Image (cartoon, rainbow, N blue to C red; front, side, top):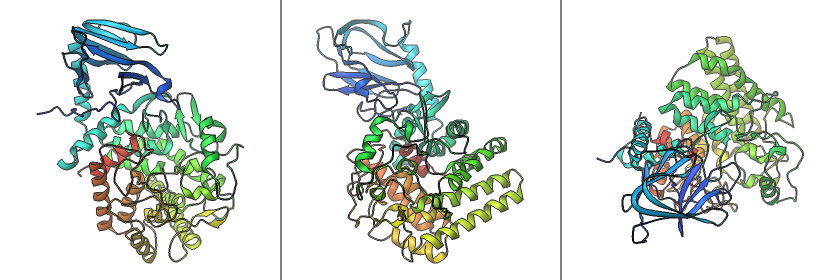
Length: 528
């Protein structure tokens, strides 16, 4: 019987790396490469060594036989192992290794025991290093939530992904979206990561939420990113590459460009939702009492600072705050009000009521229930046109149909006729296919199956719609959407950032090893 940690690593999409380590071992045309994962830095710029080749006594290259979370095993009995987060060791006898440093110089090594390849010097025993790796991976996989047999292989890869994406950041252990280019803790991502981590370690799940509650700004806003160098909370914090990309992609329809003046940058409000999910799995009223005031302040920030027209329906002041950076809704200007934001705010009010009830505060709970009902009614009154919920940009309806039009289902508070119309729209050819839900309707002129938020399937959208369908009284459609989503991920070959809805394959520019895809796949797949 194979060990539970037997996840095959291809050293391309799935590198050899470890929990808490910045080092990634990947395959290249001339051997293995070791690079460091750093915030906003391509791996090509953080290479520690490349062209690593192991040879037998006759000088013939020894191929990699297997690569698992525990070791990269070469033919001839040579192994590459993590002796610590910053330490890779190469172990074997009677073989040799060669590699190239970033300055172009070469190194060679005759193998006769366990040698440090990169990291601080030290004496290591290969059997002890291997045994320690086996123990820590066995312990991690023993905590994986159970899934049915046809989903087990992908679930193990997802569980491995969550472990290796855990890094020390800002004094906590944070789960980064991907070691390929996303080395920081993003607000929205952290909440989705917490949803899966609650099954194995509720304390670690709460850590992800505290990354942002502990960095809350004086006005109540939660920042967008916590990274090695600080936080990203407005446009003055954006890296140069992000300004260039926004100038290229946002505001193209009317010639406007995103301003370089300071604009708040955050992520959609789902913190109370995530806190309550963790609490349902592992009740902790002390934690609820500690975070409740921060959640209230974060909720009120949207109404006080992100509703410039004062109509009671907050809007996104910046594309990044929506989490939907390249959605075609931004083609009509850098500010927009899709119906998802106010749907989240409705549910957040209900979750604040749940928290108040758990803390024994019935009057406060009643206040939040009333807020939720009133906000849902306002959303319907001002944004439902009889056929769909409209998205506004610069005060005018945006003529593009996106999956966000369906997100008011998430509230569970729509009038029955409105909810039924949304469920019919979801199941229409515009959004329903073998692999729903496209982020832009299949029949919309803006649909592009490979372009970030312009058509591909994203697991967080599907996950929230599954919840919304259940909450709105459509359990059969929720179950079918869950099954189609799980099948797409199972059959696609990896845990990607997003998928092509026409082929089910990895979309052209999507990264691999993506945290929230792993987290939400696991939560959908978990047998309860």
